Image (cartoon, rainbow, N blue to C red):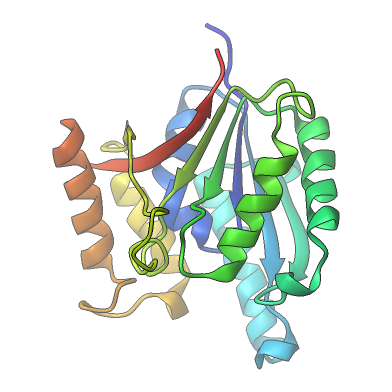
Length: 225
């Protein structure tokens, strides 16, 4: 069986865990290469002090190690979080084009284009432009993932997340919860959207929809076979 080279694009540290951790671990367990691009990083401009920045960096590295992505396959662009509007779209498209040409992924996972966070929408628009077949002929499947507190808070529009692909993560769900807990500052008690209870409920709901104990859901944007 041919290996699938997977690329997950995360606007912020934690998006990769909330949206794709189970799928990443499943792909790796099947001996498929997985790459992750972390696009932005926090800065002192967002009231992060030096101690907080060091702690965040440590959390990112711990998640990378425990999820199993090789260090060489984990790329940090270090663009300014919440300030992507100040970067020309053509520049972002160029960055993703260079990454796609270098990695040559077969499938890419993107933040959903209707998410409440503007960083998610900007990154989707730039990456989808760079993923045109004549720019990167290796890409066969483009999917968007859901991030709790962003995807479900999107305004009512034609850009709602409509999952049509479900991946069984039953063997990996408990480890996903442990990975989420590494980002301690992001997790609070129910009914906060980013709670262990909500993450579990969503995985159960997606699993019940597709016939698994736990699942992650995605919206297939394009498939080229």
